[in-house]
Amino acid sequence: MAIVLVCQWAAIGSGRAATAYPERAIRLVVGFPAGGSSDAIARIVQPTVEKQLGQPLVIENRPGAGGAIALGMVAKAPPDGYLIGLGGAAGLGVSLGVQDNVTYDAHRDLAPVTGLASVPFILAASNSLRGKTLRDIIALAKQPNKLAIGHGGNGTLMHLTSEMFNQMADTRLELVPYRGMAPVVTDLIGGHMPLGIVDPPSAMTAIEGDLIIPVAVSSAHRYPRLPETPTFAEQGLTGFEATGWFGIVAPAGTPGEIVEKINSAFVTALSDPAIVERIRELGSDPMPMTPADFSRFIGGEVKKWEAVTARAKKK
Image 1 (tube, rainbow, N blue to C red):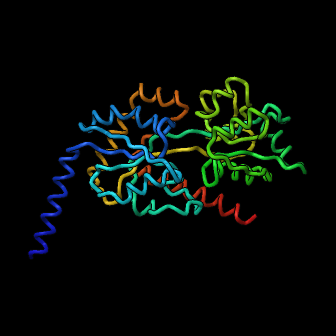
Image 2: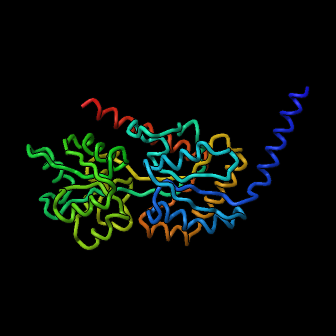
Image 3: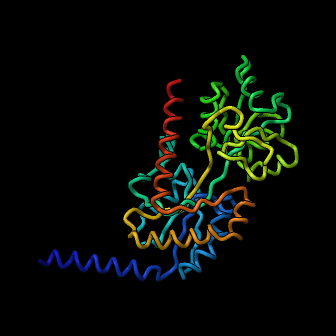
């Protein structure tokens, strides 16, 4: 009987804690450097989230290992909603074995809260490359002289998008990893790399200055800032879709009521027209989701990219 009473009081205490939440400041650990697009979006939504929750949202940057350092902190935190994290695909399960220093299981140790934003990738070409359309580039890539494509680093979604391009176009582009997308753009401008998979925040200045050529957009629909640039699918690679994305998570075991409160605060911010406009100015699209929808989204992404990686290993 004593054990039963203890369990009952524990459940009541947990319910009261969830009802009272939040009673103090909440830490949002961002797995990327200050000034990057994910950090910028976190700071754009910060005032609205604080207003909705009635407490400060303290942003703390802990970059490294594709966001895994920050999410490792979240995974080990008490499940009380006072330490949450912002991570991307690599940290949330699409690491595909390339990150040996991941100390947590994204599926087991983290609770999805909501998507935050997504961004398409752009297949960009150097002005010195002869081919200016996707069909031209595929034809060039099938010639004996090997054509190279730069991406933002091994295991990143830019890397996997490059590999998916090879698979769907039946080409053998040499995949060249860089440390981030800015140096890819620099080499495209200088003519040192013929092709690159880049994102709008890193590439739009060069594209708008006619320093590099946008060939294809990786999302399902055309990118509003590049309305004349067709998608991969529109140019013959039916079903080709890839986007970079990041979202908010809490420690596994966080009470559902608390997860719902955090979700509601972020979704309210991401639905505000003024905030939507600011996020889109950064080259991203808001992606507010329910916790269940975000969980399904992550699962679908993991399955999709695991299939791409499995095919790559069979070559």
